[in-house]
View 1 (tube, rainbow, N blue to C red):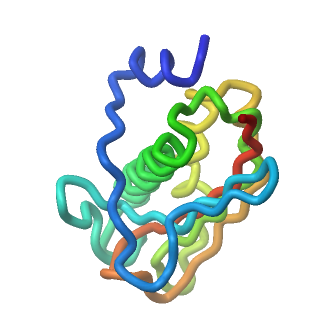
View 2 (view 1 turned 180 degrees about the vertical axis):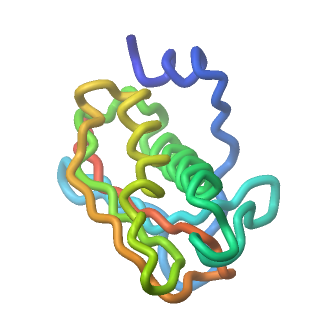
Length: 153
């Protein structure tokens, strides 16, 4: 099953990705690698999950925020490549969770993105990853995720 058909099966629609709000581009391709800039939990024109996970946002809602960020990543991949079916492998996700000490469930939160990526790409979606806590993110978003993909022409 292709990534595009898997998206349809899951009922996920990738809209037009959000434009950057600062001086950077959303994707950069270098050889067979596609780098996607950090994406937050932004949908329907607003940040969906605001605040620190563990105190203002539950871990479950943090996972939902990570899933939304992953969907935004995929929208940028499709825009850059024309189709998700040009992804050979998901190389890495870099996960940032807005939280304060002593919160330590960052991996569980970023699983919201990792689970979706593997669900869509199967074995090619199994990636390396880090999940770290930070004291603040842009727009006070609960989560931000960046990604690297191996792609083909």
